[in-house]
Length: 139
Ligand SMILES: [Zn+2]
Ligand SMILES: [Zn+2]
Image (cartoon, helix red, strand yellow):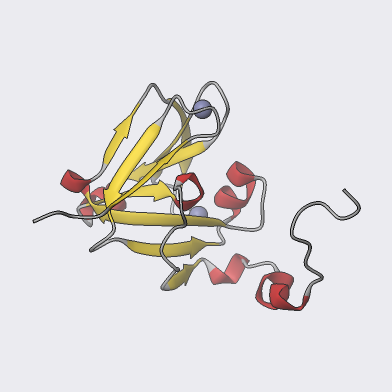
């Protein structure tokens, strides 16, 4: 039986990730740490059973804490800075690994849930109303 894998890399390609599409879940996280780490409005993550997830390549770690003060490791590529994986006791307790969805080639699964909506930027829900360009406008 073959399992389709979701595969991806960091921006520079030194870190690669893979996880099975079947059984993978995806979530948007609006927490303040995800906003700062990604430099964006929210992060999109995919998670799958820990034994099925592979992350290859050297990673740097930032020791973050949750809103409850529990430790969180935010792992990133030391060469290009791409966020790669988030590790905490709560995540490990779920038996999954949490990978940034933006690393994946060919598209990540659509998110099924949104976390830390209390911290969501008000305009995040109205993005479909913004002007769209296929690339940079005027290019
Ligand atoms: Zn990199
Ligand atoms: Zn978050």
